[in-house]
Image 1: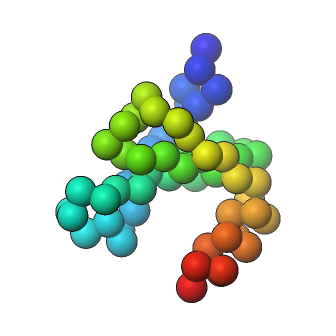
Image 2: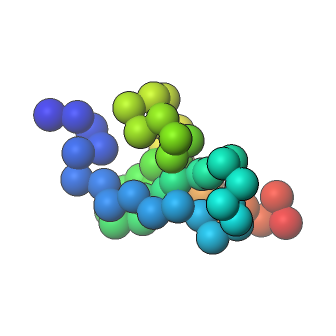
Length: 60
């Protein structure tokens, strides 16, 4: 079974329909996976909750 088979993916509201879409799943207990929503079988980055929070804070 794929590691992220249980992930419920959503597209970032910041994508704005411009074709540059970031998908994330926030229903997994220990990880927040992130991927290019145009390539659902492509590579996926996975962050811990605390790392994800720090990453988003840094982007702001």
